[in-house]
Amino acid sequence: RIPRACGSCAAPIRDTYYQVGEAIACERCRRRLEWDATHGSAIGRFLKATLLGALAAALGAGIYYAVRALTGYEFGLIAVVVGLFVGGAVRMGSGHRGGVPYQLLAMFLTYTSIVSTYIPEIVKGFREAEAADAAPAPATAGNVAAAGAATGESPAAAATPAPSMGPLLTVIMGVAVVAFAFAAPFLMGFENIIGLIIIGIGLFEAWKMNRKPDRTVTGPFRIESAP
Image (cartoon, rainbow, N blue to C red; front, side, top):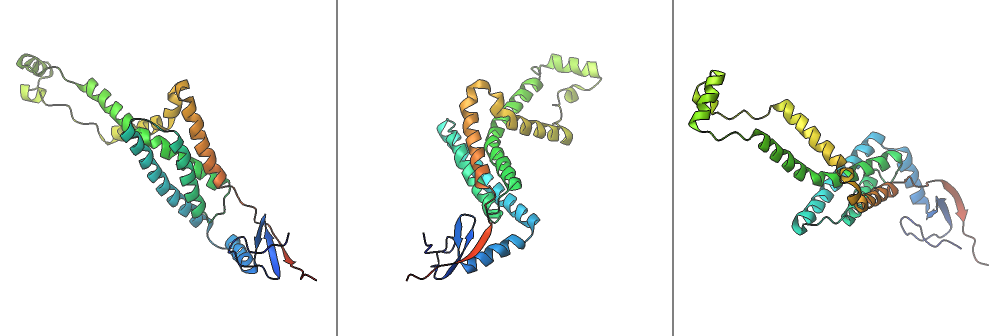
């Protein structure tokens, strides 16, 4: 079969063409592909892919959480959409290069986007537990005076609430919240088996979109004129 157009720019093939992987490329696109493959900063591309992927992950998390908050239901299929969205952003940032580092990055950002929607509920649970533990006894005059006598403080000082947690405890609490969020899909047990499968599909889509393409160039090939 004689190729009629370039697979990249759709320019008509008139005399010669190149094979780039499984695609047909004209002379101009072949030169551009070779330039892209040999120029540019790998670190810069990875940082760009991280930035675009993180923005896509944040937007995906917002959509995921908004749907659950508005409907009261968790539609796991949105995880697949998030995987496609984040995977496409990482692929764009990498200049369509792909490879294992970009695949791992896309999977990590996709999973982070999904589990970050659990953080508000986890924080709420921690605060409710903390409030229940820190709830003081009714501040009657008798128990305030007794507390002051036991500690050697004045009744006014004994009635003063305990100070809030310090910076170190806040950091520890934040780490615990993130850890619970990342483990949440597995902590739900067998009831969430369908959810885990759907999350796995989303991660696979992000991985698949960032496979390294075959850019082996062969040619040039010449189109023979019809007799």
